[in-house]
Length: 261
Image (spheres, one colour):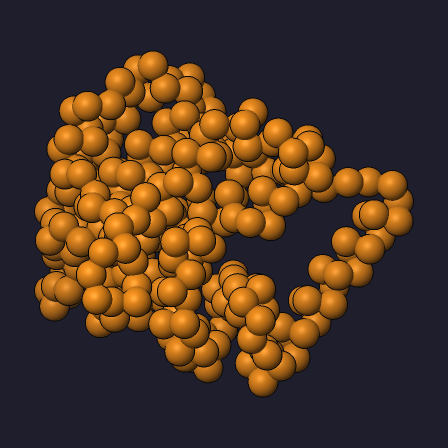
């Protein structure tokens, strides 16, 4: 999946295909979605490159909702994730978002919205959730879940598209890129990249009040062996303790976690 040649200590990341190749070479009508097949996806995905931010925002909603349901990775999720990665750094995904014209309503950046979806998809297949799947379904869980395994294998390629946006000048894009990068970096080949995520993770904790983003940072840093005590505020501690209590009560009641696939 990665090429370790060269002088750098970091692996060379996978090269993504051209976005048009993903659209043209995928048999979308044969792929399962939560609502049928993906035959309508190519036209919707193509609108993610429209120059009008409002059109892109509608396309984000239509395209990503079509493959998102109950934290499950479907057959069509994989090429959609690959396509999203291939267009993250395309100029069109940022077109028109910095207008000064007061007649235009500002929109949440397309790149941030795409990164948000990638991060949630990556978390659905992160190490913790795969571990839950293996506890519930047994050691053959990944063999019986080819879509999950395929997404796990895609992580270095997707990370290669996310990485340049870690320094983006828009705060929402920059933070969304970090939150997407954290679960992707669980791939063993990306271990050398994790240290570079620590500083921006700490900066986010100092600046952001977003509950979802703070939780994802704290979970990642804790999993990587970092002391997070100085980063947690009272709300973070309260949320962590409440979740631990709920897990204890759930297991005490004889219930087990169901994998989100």
